[in-house]
Image (cartoon, rainbow, N blue to C red; front, top):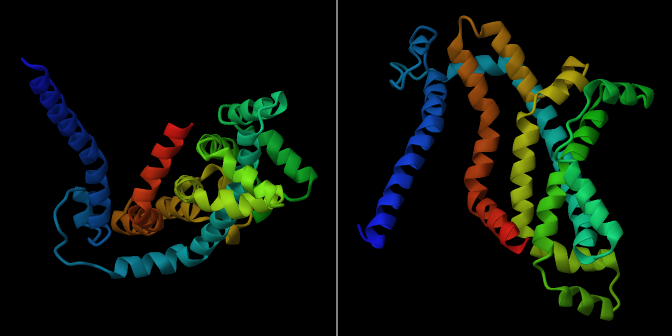
Length: 277
């Protein structure tokens, strides 16, 4: 068999494997989506059959009984603030780490990298926030999300910024620009694809995360969407899977829409960051 035929065969095998992997993800997603429009009897089949009658009132029931609007507002607030702070702090820190080649900057880079490996300790963190008198509110959750996501974000930003020519910084400094002015006017506009990549990763991770809100939000009025889904499943998981699927669909919709609209920039940012790093 010639080399060309081998390469063609490998391509076909790879495509078949990718299709099978895609089906493993798409089939459960379609079962959930279709089940959200079925009645409580139809949905127990857990199949891909279309509903006999499309029950849009399932979503109305979920909003009323699951109090999703309040949970949605809480998730939006926590996710947007945490993501915004993380992107700003990480990109600023990475600008310095990428431009300075001192031992201290290298130490900080590896220090951030270690942060991607070491897990968070829940009980000592709860004790710390209790002493600081911020436990149970939005602030301690936002601080945690920011601290947890900064290391990986710095890893991406540093690799991307290293590919930006230093001559741009030097030209700005010659013109009298400060470090912050250089960052905001020169570097930040060039980070668009990387910003979108980090934005999607952070937004998806924070939006779907349940452990931190479960342990660090003690007020039911401040619960996030995953907590609402968790509670709703406990109430209806044994009898009304159609309502559970409607709840899951509404919870996943913002993340799915974001990825669909920004997937090109997301893939571009990952590729450019890997190559430049």
